[in-house]
Length: 209
Image: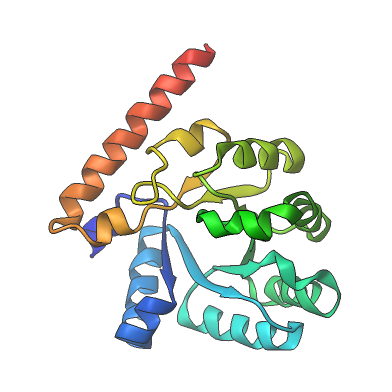
């Protein structure tokens, strides 16, 4: 596992892994990631009143994770404002989902995209999630939020977005999960993915010179 994680800038765990493997594996992943000095992201997509999310956040921190993902649609008062305040107290970075990578996001979520960007800016969160499957959203998020807010982009690989394209559009991180974890040889696949990403980024950087 350490060799695999050493190839990346961070590791993201979610509910399927928690429910299948339990807390022990999540702690082990966090310990290895901390040793490597990479981000440790708990992707439980928090979506509740502030007190409930705050309590969950404390447990996330105890597990060893330093980034927590929450949905933006909860609203600020009594919700996200409490989460962000508690996160600063316990030392966890908050990432807000402002759009999603599946088609269903267009039915509701994306109608409030600009509002969610405003909330992210108002609360001064560490980062947002915007889909690599809609690069115009990534570019718009970067334009609106400036250079300091981190943009994490899902949808790369299995959902169709090409490796490296989100980074070339202004994202800081591409989230690549199923392409690797479902591979018969995850380590080799990860190396190939990293190579593809680096190749694409080199190409897009050259085009701006």
